[in-house]
Amino acid sequence: MSLKLLVDSCVGQLNAEQKALVANVGDDINRLLKLTGELL
Image (cartoon, rainbow, N blue to C red):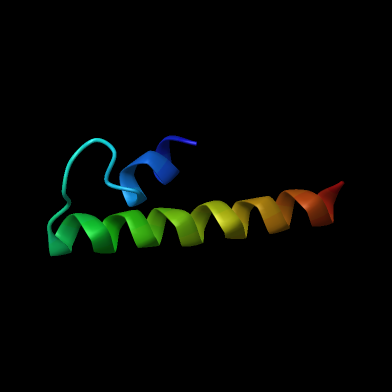
């Protein structure tokens, strides 16, 4: 939820480095969700 707020610029504009970090966090979240699903 909070990651979506950052991506949608609801809390302000992100610079290029911040956008890259947010993208990496999103990738990590998806990877963890997939691993968790496989464990269950």
